[in-house]
Image (tube, rainbow, N blue to C red):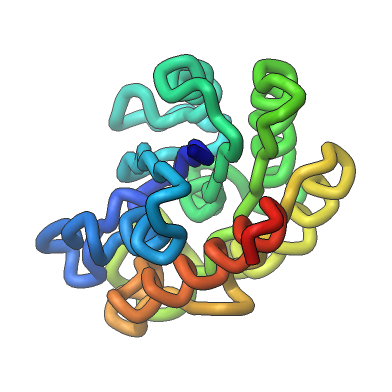
Length: 208
């Protein structure tokens, strides 16, 4: 059995672009990933609305992954793959003003994870799709600079993945945030992301 943990924010949680509900397990990308990978894999998910790589939230407790990723790793061990998809909330106005600042938080988190994980566990870093209009109208935590920051995350995250020997996927190359809110994946987006991750894991594990 190949054990996989998908760790992320509201897009891993499956928050719907209309902000009214949560997609069911079989629609959320970790659940869709499970169906695509089959019985040789076990896919667990840990998604939290508002989660950042390393930045605290002034309104909600426990949003920094630095505080809770170690707990998740221990809770779900042993792991063959740890998939981290964070970054959208790092772009909020109160968090960072540049892609470099946002990446500093991700590098801090990756360093923590690499230090905890056994040698056989592979860390997969996924950059979420960039946010876009109408996010600046619907969500007061984001402005035009936030959009620019999110557009620069992929290059920064790719360099971090290379530096720490992580597998890497730029989700913006396979899907995009919904036009409804410019922030969250719709059903088609979850399916496309799951397919890309499944291809990566099957290829890496020699099961393609």
